Length: 487
Ligand SMILES: *[C@@H]1O[C@H](CO)[C@@H](O)[C@H](O)[C@H]1NC(C)=O
Ligand SMILES: *[C@@H]1O[C@H](CO)[C@@H](O)[C@H](O)[C@H]1NC(C)=O
Ligand SMILES: *[C@@H]1O[C@H](CO)[C@@H](O)[C@H](O)[C@H]1NC(C)=O
Ligand SMILES: *[C@@H]1O[C@H](CO)[C@@H](O)[C@H](O)[C@H]1NC(C)=O
Ligand SMILES: *[C@@H]1O[C@H](CO)[C@@H](O)[C@H](O)[C@H]1NC(C)=O
Image 1 (cartoon, rainbow, N blue to C red):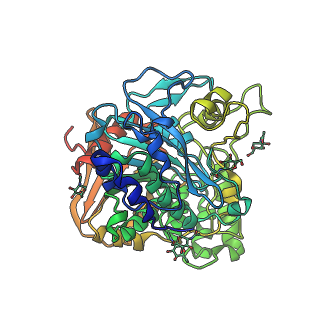
Image 2: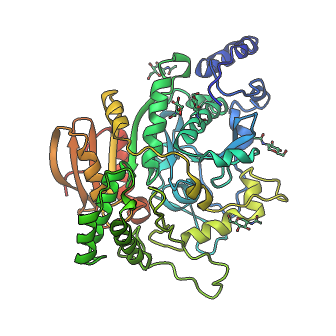
Image 3: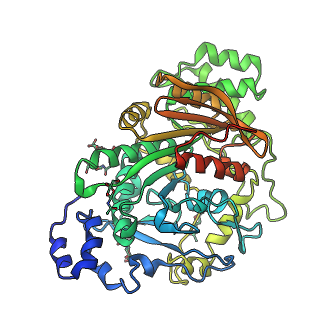
């Protein structure tokens, strides 16, 4: 697949008069084989994506903004469609930037995590039967676009099963990029808005990779996307540093013994191509995960989800076991309320919910789960380090903020500090606390071209733990100002 330029489109548009001409300016060169005339048909209300507007989501609190959900076809030949959920900003959306939010995995859903547990306006109730309003939703500040990528994640799918066998970083970046252009066709008024990408965890790879693709393709003015910056939370960044940070953190937070740690120090060379070929190393790292399995690696000091009576129905949060054949890091899911994943699963598998979100007709349901473990296991390519991309994007003048919940054991604050130190950036503002509600919310340090900040006492998915300070932090990011420095 790829980006194909469709010159034929322009002439269709010419006939449509000045208003449409103005819209056309924003998408002169759409991509990836679409039926471009089609959108003109549903331009009834001047909102091209209006067919995707969500009007009857069960249990939804009443709100004063519109939201849209549905599919965008990213590849017609193979029948690949990505699912998105888009919330307009709560007030004056036309003046607010556009934020794309990505969760990681690989294989996990930005709808299940980002939208309904972290920063979206509607959080799933603990009974799985409704939603509650999130007063700290980031759509206070931005138009929020949540994307389930690649195909196989959440509601996103491909009609060509062989597509599922070639998923990796590269494939994901390509399809996400195609998605953006096709999405802008549906929502042309956002075409030129300031655009940011944010996310967590394995999106630490996705985000720089997609940003680089946008940056490179922006050399073609007709494909221009107004990318302004990136924000990455507890991001996977560089294998060697991420692994080193993980084991150092486990030891320094009393998860493993001195003996295990010293074996790791003696026998693990995380910079080698296959650190696991050393049996001592492999066994000692297994021991780290054995200990982490008993608690929530994503949030060291909160309880794990313990299923009640319906034990068989409730999937135990699986630890993706450490595999000596693969450098892929293991995963388990968790959060402040570690049962949330289950609530989301119940909610998104309801027929009325799927119908309201334009996912199914209410009869032929899609099988939604928060993470697709097969995608995780079969992942084809993963950049060992995105630090070279950081360098390129910093040089390009993009705003880059990296934050870290400091009670996460999975991509711990140490991993992030080791990784960022590879950049060797000059410090422009030394380590100092930042504040929220008169307390130290974390620390931050500013570098030439990058801001690094911690969230004190927050786990992997920071906004679940610190919703209100996360929103404040996001405001600072958008404003290009330091986080609040006064008590
Ligand atoms: C991604 O797109 C590039 C450029 O069009 C193409 O060369 C490459 O093969 C694509 N990769 C995948 C995995 O689809
Ligand atoms: C996938 O196949 C189904 C059933 O034929 C069809 O309704 C749907 O439009 C196809 N999806 C895409 C993206 O082409
Ligand atoms: C994907 O891989 C192809 C071929 O190796 C390369 O040309 C292309 O730039 C890559 N795309 C991305 C987004 O990394
Ligand atoms: C689109 O964005 C570019 C870059 O920020 C800006 O120069 C241009 O004036 C904008 N055009 C419109 C129509 O808003
Ligand atoms: C849904 O997916 C899960 C795992 O992804 C699988 O175990 C289950 O059988 C599927 N259910 C249906 C109805 O396809």
